[in-house]
Figure 1 (spheres, rainbow, N blue to C red):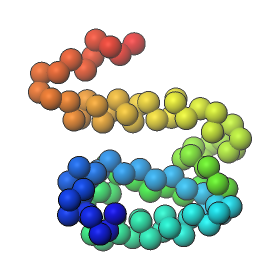
Figure 2 (cartoon, rainbow, N blue to C red):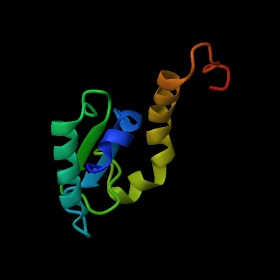
Figure 3 (cartoon, rainbow, N blue to C red):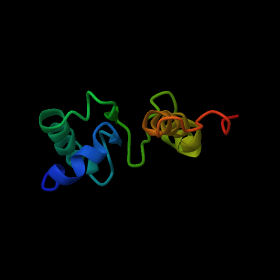
Figure 4 (tube, one colour):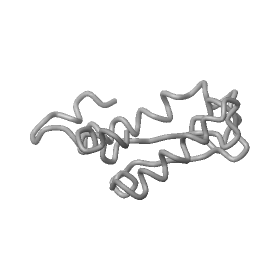
Length: 104
């Protein structure tokens, strides 16, 4: 990401959302700390809508829901992320595009 940010950064700006338990079983949280530092210092991602969120004492596959234990929250990814995806679609849709008729 750092190496190619000049090429890919404009396309990813504000679209990077990372959710990680701070006690990841595979220590992936260490890589997320580095990614977060990069995004905070070298990009506008965090100000443009991207986020990095850590689950306190959460394990691998923590998905960003601090109100539920991991074994429950991982069953409802679609209800957590569809609203975020819809916002991105509306924000990035071409002018005049129909972004309402298909929403129920």
